[in-house]
Image (tube, rainbow, N blue to C red; front, top):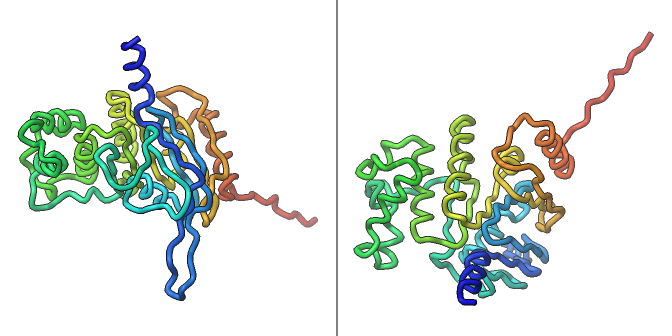
Length: 270
């Protein structure tokens, strides 16, 4: 019975519940701008979900609400049944810009969260483990300006993961990388997720990236942001980007976003 309860806790670690969440911001003219309008979404433990939609639809706002960096105007956000009321180490966050401290070497950048929690001396052995996890085991003493963009983003991921979060929130984490590095990093993220069984929620504007990485893709409406549709990705990993099913789903998402385009037949006059 005890073993069953432990298994149940492991299986439900990292469940995000978003319940009728709205968010408004003040406008300089004194009015209010509605960024999110009654968003409802549940993300299962260990699931990889991508948020996609036009700029200004509230994707990053929703991520910041889950991170606890901002508060919802109405509705509720919960992690494993507990109300989210501020930032916490149980939710890691990685941005498009790695935001590494230039005066710290990579070891100390990754260790920053441990020091902030005052557990560095007890857990400093984890720094090397997480640097190895992201392929930077030999770069602990290197400073950020010596790293490539992809390596800096790996260090950012290690820093977010070292606190053993239940959820990793990714805000366009690969958006600044070139196409080939980006595809390599996508595979790295999948490998890290498989090894850690962590819930991941990612904001992206890249439809191919969303399909390649995700268990589900959440398409949001133009602002105020709402969930327009949720698409299950029906094929297993690893995924071939040129697979007909992959390309068909890509076309479907582009049509929902009104970016599929129309090819007009030329008019012939005889």
